[in-house]
Image: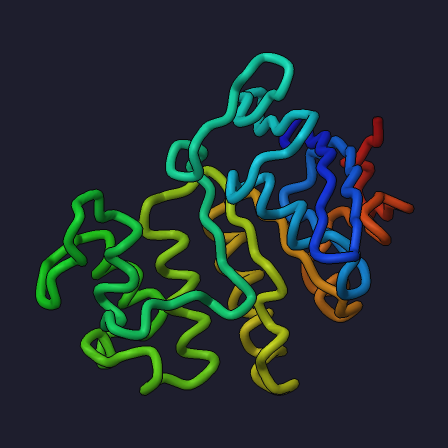
Length: 232
């Protein structure tokens, strides 16, 4: 089974209480978590990535356990081998394009050097057409360019799967269409498993082999084109 996800966690923020309780299994290569804003999609993705710890449950990818509350397993995000693209891209404003991408390979306390050479970084600079802006900073880039940098940073360490949080939400309609096509082509070429979260039905049409519908912190439905999804 590609994805075996069972997550429960209680959140409290001031007077607001929210319980996330999401459980699904899927062999889909392109899985979409779909639902309105505030449904719990981003929290689900962060728990899968290890950017937070669930109160109960487990996260398994292709039979490998990344998190299991009962067994006391909770791999750090770096150990899980998942590439994560945040909704706002989360680029470091004080680092160049090259340094932002290289950061995913960097293990020291200092930031990557401005002119350091990494074969993997060079590969993704070329793949995303970012070579001429390698030494520019994020505030000098367009929205589409920033998204490409974020994708390059997520892919440079050869992750076992890619997690994308509303990757087209901040883009205009024409650019969204173009970058959706780019991402479909890239995912097909790399054959990398992917979970994408969105509230946009056009994203579902472009990407989904299977869809998990989430509302109020729970899975409320499923849609499958290829029979790849089974719920628990």
